[in-house]
Image 1 (cartoon, helix red, strand yellow):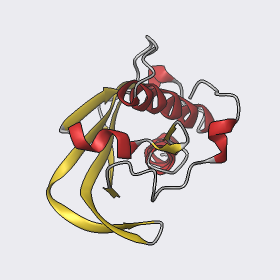
Image 2: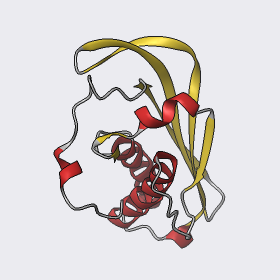
Image 3: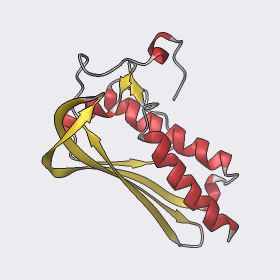
Image 4: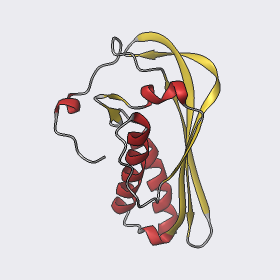
Amino acid sequence: MATRRAIRGVLGNFLGTYTSRYSDYNGYWLFGFLIDDLGDLRIDLLQTSAVESTNPLGVAIRSAVVKFADQLQKARLVGSQITEAWLIIQKLPGVVKGSINGVSCVGDNVNFSVEAVMDGGRKYERKQVVFVASHNATVELRSMRATEPRRNT
């Protein structure tokens, strides 16, 4: 029972953290850099080999793996309790209107789905749909973290 509650919390907290403003690329929200070429992206959250690429896709993959591991640690779950964990990012069909810092713009709804299979075979899943517009430096605010020394996230 406690493990089931813990993994549900891990998945929900991971999605909240991963899709937040703290997922950035050079101080700007990461997903604005990915949206134009995004189809379906599937990330193995238990991968042990570090992605070294510094392009937006590499940052998205590395950040997902690190943030998922961080949430597991906070919930005191160990990787051996989970046999599979995946993040699936899908751009949903159709262009939609949204707002970035109060400025109207067009973009896409993106489905972020995280799933984990526990060592007993039980599967858990959480989903979140987020509006994403292409990166536009004239509308977006750059994070002050961009001027701080970079950590491995």
